[in-house]
Image (cartoon, rainbow over all chains, first blue to last red; front, side, top):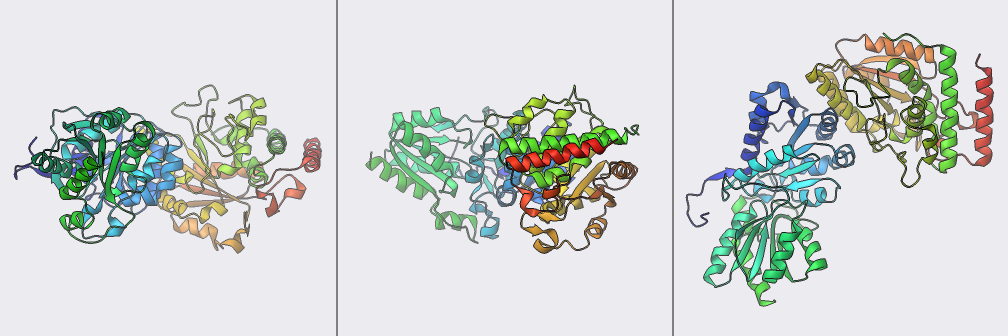
Amino acid sequence: MNTSCEKIPMVPTRDGFGKALLELGRTDKNVIVLSADLTDSTRAAWFKKEFPNQFISFGVAEQDMFGAAAGLALSGKIPFACTFGVFASGRAWDQIRISIAYMNLNVKIGGTHGGISVGPDGATHQALEEITLMRMLPHMSIIVPCDAVEAKKATIAAARVKGPVYLRLGRNACPVVTDEKVPFEIGKAVVLKEGKDLSIFACGHMVYEALLAHDILKKEHIAARVINLHTPKPLDKDSILKAAQETGAIVTVEEHTLQGGFGSAIAEVVVQQCPVVMKMIGVDDSFGESGEPEQLYKHFNLTAADIVLAARQAVKEK
Amino acid sequence: MNQRPDILMLKRKAVEIRKDIVTMLYRAGSGHPGGSLSIVDILVVLYYYALRYNVRDPQWRERDKLLLSKGHACPALYAILADRGYFPREELWTLRKLGSRLQGHPQLGLPGLEISSGSLGQGLSIANGMALANRMDGIESRIYCIMGDGETNEGQVWEAAMTASHYKLNKLCAIVDRNKLQIDGLCCDVKDMKQFDAKWQSFGWEVVETDGHDVQKLMDAFDKAREVVDKPQVIIAHTIKGAGVSFMENKVEWHGIAPKKEEYEKAVRELDAALAEIR
């Protein structure tokens, strides 16, 4: 892994999702892709082109799409319902709750445009609540891949498990930091950097920022363990407890609301089973806004520099 | 086409189901009598005439499916499923009790039950998904979905109506229990649906209107719907909320309360008298 070289390939996680759908279509006729008028944006279009008979368009009608996904799953299909994260997790939440999660159906949700890195479209299109909203639903799994390579593996893994899975995907190109060859397992966190002074848990786009923070901290002789916790649910509790016991301080980083999200999920484990110093980085009780992704990361304090500040403080408070 | 069952048998069956419903609700101490009683004749005609299914193999892939989108009317569905042998009739008396498979609103897992429901407006979309899956798999079975007229206030119903018509889902048949009452009062006072039949027609559906308590006319309506080859069908079944129990009929108060002892006994007396008259 190379975090300092400028030539790291940049690919959006939604592209990894789109590629995986194609691969799934080639091997399983039961994989059906559903779209609510965002077929290009969600990369469902790639699947539609090659498998038009396994693609269903619903127009701008997310609630109906998720209901139909339930009907397809009840008929033995593996539906992937694709739309922006705001519409999937918000607009159709009750449909996901009753028509999908309550029946524990094999529906996969492709929620693209997660996080403020959606950029200029602003708050209405920047999903910041999906982890919170999906985490409270029994049976639901949530995966937040950190790059396009992991997104592809996660999508294929989602198709292979029974039950509902929410895939949180990003719009913008982000650095590819994982390897094609590293196996992906739902619910199993990956330690990207070893360290003994503190642990940084991150998911999605924030994994790269965490790796940058690691390199900065290293120069200050602070050894940070960096953990890619790609599955906020089911949570890898062992990895969290191990980090708490061995490093004594935890920083969580999410491009998501702090209220009930990724950091909260980790905190629920830490406070009950191994209380240690914790700092949580994320969007604090705020909507997003328009701007370029880099500007927004700075504005909402989601950069490597912000992680470094939190890490220093956490180590000091140990 | 299925052979038509004996009319008197269907009528008797409907009264027996109504007796089961009031008994279940009385024993449970809560529940929804009005909208359960209004769909009884529809369910009897479905389960004794229109639907193709196999009680011994509830998951038979080629079965017709009945989705109860208006989940609060589940006592009626539970009663007919027990009557047809999907589970022991004694289980009816566990309705709404802790640990029962007969939840206050339907939960998947009870044999013969196709979906969980209770949050209104979701069934027709699920029916669309089933009809689309059947078409992909070359299965000719039909999907039926019962909704309340109040339920059609929900926007999702009309999203689903557009989808079904866009994909010409001719194996899909919606049934609207048009009892003209919803919790807050008369449907036309709560939110006037105006020309209800014209709404469905303009959404691209074949509309069949019928008396929802006349088993003969209901069989005619299901036959007529089945013959449509290029679009989904909606049977607007004109019904009486609380049908069969005089003091519950057309009374909005009986949407969501169980009968007390005297009321229950009176209802049973009436239904027994009705049963004696069918010959």
